[in-house]
Length: 305
Length: 296
Ligand SMILES: Cc1ncc(C[n+]2csc(CCOP(=O)(O)OP(=O)(O)O)c2C)c(N)n1
Image (tube, rainbow over all chains, first blue to last red; front, side):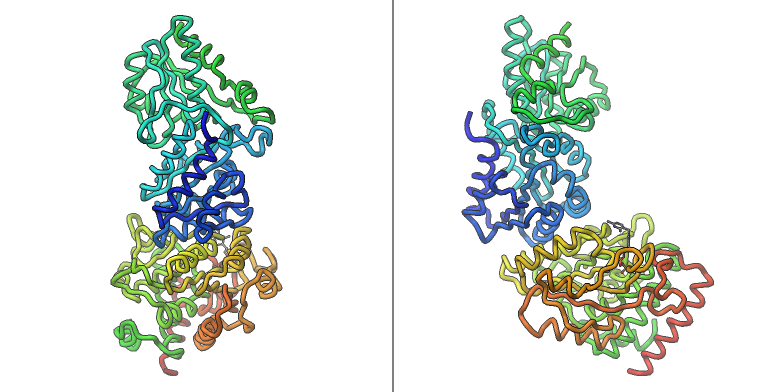
């Protein structure tokens, strides 16, 4: 376990600031939570705290991006996705502007603050917007890689970040699908931090003689369909896992392509059902909503029956 | 095209005087009315009220290059009231950004002249708008970019008072007063009529100047007559008069200006111009052109 994703992201912002003069950073009065404050401290002249006004922040950043800058806007994922949807859609996506939307406290990771602060619909919203790319890093390293990738893009990228210290996944050179366990019985495709639980699940399954292949899939859009297809060609079974409602998120994205391309397999998905979530310590909370190694293993086993 | 107008427009890049601008605005207003009637769609009321404001900006003040629309140092204009797209298109066409004949494609399938302005399709549009309430934030970003990169360009945001109903406008007002970028101006086309009714009926804004001042803006003491080119030029002189930013100018205007039966009426915000109204309206608009021509 290394830095939290937000710490890693904030530090990376500050590091990249030195070599990327076009990088400007915005925050909406939560920079000590999002950790964009690292950048603010290192480059006060390129850091704008606009107050608690997410919509305004997004449009200001958009304006700057039309004149040669590459802004990163930071706020809680839920408020960016909900209070600034119009600005993200009509200004940033419609004009394909290079603005990085960094959604902090993604999923249930602001666990104690409860439902009002938990982003469980952000991926569905962002994914539906033309021109938008959507990345849900699985660990601190992936968060850094997502930022590096996004800075190379000419259009918008949404990066959903996690608040808490989470286990590290096997490292790769750049953001993309990572196979954390090789297997031939069932494919578990896990989005964001659910990948580490899926990896643990594979260990549990192994004990029962089931060989699960675990893919950490951080990029929801554009989706790396080929790697998923290759794995499913081998296993014939797919279990998707995500920290988001099942409507419109990662599992939806995968099943849409599989249906369209006529790839048949036994399929299941773990995510938040059609309910609002609640307060609690992070891991027990995740477990209550189905995201735990045990529950993933159980559902994978069912697929194999 | 009216020959005097043609003569004026052939003098590319010239800064016109108040009387010439009045003639141009009268002529442009007739072009807008005509195009909206031909196409049977679009927004007349708010396009007409801003005619002098945009004519004075585009034909007296802005530093822009029609042969290099993306020129980094150009002044920026954000039409926050994007529904007045026909007004912006009329300016850009006559300023040489695209052929005047293309105005006739307004709101047709495959046109560059989208219902609301689109910066990706049409040269000269600095920002796509349409959803109200965005313009001031976006303009602020452009002005901050100028300061950050040491550029001298100006950023003008044109807003209607209905646009100021949006909470985001007030977020932007607060943040502009915090960051204070130079050469940043909010021009309010205060025609006092929105979509559904008058501003007093829908959402009273008074005391508007005091509110803006209380938000930390440098507000012009005079509420200029925004349908009078001499007064609009006077407001430009005020913009240049000191270095206190951000600046706001409130222009008293008339919605549907120039066609008597549309003036001050919210029903003419976006109504289709029927043939009968067109014939009557054109008589008035043409008479105004003649009057402005005679007083040159
Ligand atoms: C966010 C949003 N809500 C509603 C509309 C529909 N609408 C278009 S124009 C308008 C009234 C605008 O009034 P004002 O800004 O005063 O414009 P003007 O009178 O100058 O035309 C409304 C409600 C819109 N374009 N955007």
